[in-house]
Length: 395
Image (cartoon, rainbow, N blue to C red; front, side, top):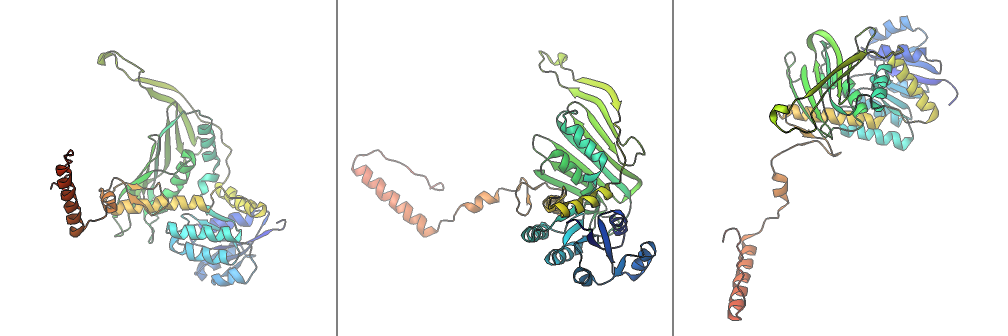
C-alpha cells in the first residue's frame, strides 16, 4: 500500500483527541473522519482540525467514506461491538486498552481478523516507549542478572470510571510492560481491592502475579492517592532498575546493588548475608512520544502486512489476567489459575475435581460384587487354595 492510509477515529473523549493529533501528523496517514456521539466534542475538535470530517453515525464512518482503518477509543464495553463491525466491514482495526471486556470477545475479534487478513492491534502504548525499550535491552543483555520480582505503582486522584474498576483502567500499562519483560504469562493472579466511592467498582487494588522460576510481580493501582505516581522497580540477582515515568530527565536508574547468600557454612555463627552496594547510573534515552511511535507502527503493519508488537493475541493475554483479577476480587483475594486458555479457575481449590471423576456404584452392583467374592472365597476354601480377603468400604 503506497498511497496514504485513510483512517477514522471513533471516540473523541479523554484519549481520542491524542490519537487524532498523532495520526493527523503522520505523513503516510490521511485522517478522514472523527466520530463521537457528542456534537459538542465534534464541534470543538473541528475548530482544531477543520479539514477532518465529523460524524455521530458510526455506520456512516464504516460504510460511507471508504476508510482503510478504524481506531477505537471509546468505553471498554463498546470495544467489542465497534471493533467487530469494523473488521466485518474489512477495516484494519486499532483498539485502545483493554482490548475488550472479556477473553471470549477478544478471541472472536482475533479470529475474524485472521480470517479476513486484517491487522488487529491493541493500544499498549508503553511497549513503544523508548524508556521501556531501553529497560528491555538492559535486561535481555543480562546486565541485572536473573529477575527476582517486579513492583509497580500507578497512583493518582481520579479519573473515576463508571464501567470498569481501577485495575482494568490503570494496570494494563504495567501489565504490558511486565509481560514483555518476563516473556511469558503468569501462572496465577490474586487481587484485593476496595470500592470507596462507587459501590461495586474498586478504586484501589493490589494485584499479585506468580511466574515460573519463583518470579513474581505486584501492581498497586489507585484513583484515591494525593500524588501522581508512575513507578516500577525491577529487582535482579546482580542489579536493580528503578523506572520513574514522571522524572523529567533520569527516568531509568540502574543500581549496582544485590544481596548474596554464602555458598556454605559450618556453624550458624558463620552464616552472614553479603550485601553489595555499588554505583548508580542513568542511561541516556532519546525522548520521543510513544503514542506517535505506536500510531506509526499501526500504519507500517498495514502497509507491510506485518504483525503488530501489541497484536490481538497480546491484547487477549492481558484481558485474561484482568478477568482473573476480577474473579480473585470476587473470591476475596484467592489466587486464580491462568495456565490454561479456559476460563480462570481457582488455585488450590478443594479437591472436588478428583472426586467428581469417580463413578458412583449402585447398591445392587455392590451386592453383586460382594456375592461373587463370597462364592469365590467358598470355592477356594474347598479346593484348599490360599484365601484372599478383599475389604470393600470397611466390609
